[in-house]
Length: 253
Image (cartoon, rainbow, N blue to C red; front, side, top):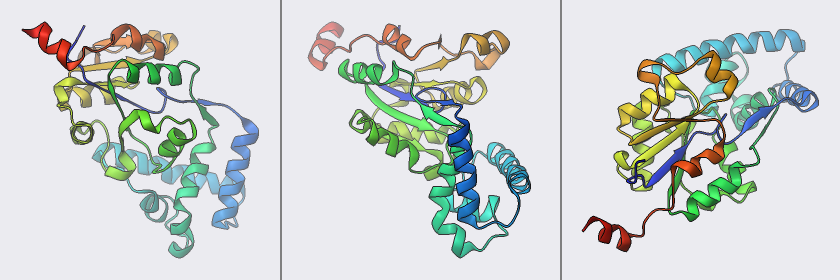
């Protein structure tokens, strides 16, 4: 067990919140998006075009490790043929609706209690996330009254770079004021999260993977993390209460 960990950084999607299918919710999001952009296409045609552009953007984004801002995403990559003056002011709302077309995002029951307990145990908490949205995660933290527990929230859509670029991890460690060697990252993607965390020099990397995914795609080679957990609450088994500074100095003397 690494007793030198001071800061725990968490991924967002598939770590803090998971997508739950909700056909009515998703359908409403798709229709509202079309209404906002004032498309004359049918839903089938509109989304076929949008998905094609989305896939092209994702390929470029992953290869370059760059994330566009919301405004750039919609005016340059996804809806370049629509009037800029109409689309640019709507970018934030369009991003939310685009994500909502998949369903609702909700935290498992153990997420909020564990966040509070890790804070109580003396760990600094942060978020490092690849995401196209600039406000959804901060808004969720405020809604759940969790913002006070996170000393750094680093989003690719704001920083303009994304995992596995080590700079996104370094920026997070700078913001929280802890050297990378004393930080841990908890993610869900072996290829992206393990490699990026190792390159950044973090002291530990943990993957949260479901039993089904683990059986189908077990991490291998350079993608093997220090720990694999299946439930968020298992973090409490890895991170005991930290020593106070006085007790820490005494234990080292």
